[in-house]
Amino acid sequence: FAEFQLPGFVPVASQMAPDPEFPTVVFPNPEEGRATWAESFAAATAAGATICVANDPDADRLAAAEMPAGGTAESDWRSFSGNEIGALLAHWTWTQWKARNPGKDPGSVAMLASAVSSKMLAAMAAEEGFVFRETLTGFKWLGNIAKDLEAEGLEVIFAFEEAIGFMFGAVHKDKDGVAAAAVFAEMAAQISAQHNGRTVAQHLDWLYGQYGYHAGRASYFVADSPAASKAVFERLRQEGYPPSIGPLLVESVRDLGVGIDTGLPGGKPTLPWTPGDMMITFRLAGGAELTLRASGTEPKLKYYLEVRAEDRNEAEATAAAVAAAVWVDLVSATPGLNDQSRD
Image 1 (cartoon, helix red, strand yellow):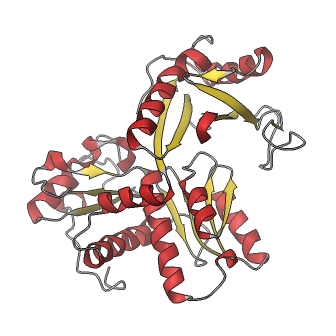
Image 2 (image 1 turned 30 degrees about the vertical axis):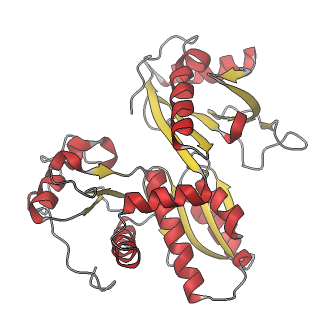
């Protein structure tokens, strides 16, 4: 914060000393919901702060929350998803690059996101003119593709994945929660100063107005064993992909376990694929996209959904309807999975 010339932050005293038991949280990951934020929100509310940032134990991920205008209680805090933080930081990084490089070709700049992350960065690139690249999940892929793009002469200024991982510039090719915390705080302060007290949430709404509203859902089903998740993909490949998911028609399918992409000429995916890989993306009517992916470390079958529309209510309603249909249309015919998805 000092390096960014920001005021000193208010630490959460109960969480300052390292403790491998993590006694102050249910689970030491700020993605896990309000229970994990409890100590932070209490300290921030007591200090009168309006922004709260949190890192995971090894500080390579960033979560962020904001006290909305008029809010005063701990229950009023609004946390941002990884996709929302990614959109905010991407746009902020882009505006700062433009301010430092007036007149320079936007096409000389690149930003990246993983395949299961929001497509808002792609929409931003289409509008602003910078290069966007999609990669497989994980910073192994994001970092290596960034390196390849730099070898081609492009300047990579930002990359992110929805699991609250963010990478800036050419300093290193990995996610960095400490740098992201400083950039997020700087962004929040400058947005408020430049736009008459605009909050981060209000700025996010402004971005939706510029690039389209993106309604996201990410959840998972608990599998009895990794074999149960595998069986879902095997059944879909043998019986055929569904013609629709909920209210939306399936327009094309990318299956990285058999190497097909029905939405591209030639039918082959541009992303690397591996026989038997458990990841299928359904591109739906209206620009919506749903990816089904098995966790590589836990007995979970995950899905990532995003619906884009000009109207917030329409996007949210459609996203809710498609999310509700994932179990019935894709998963329920395979035994061994819990039909209660978890946020």
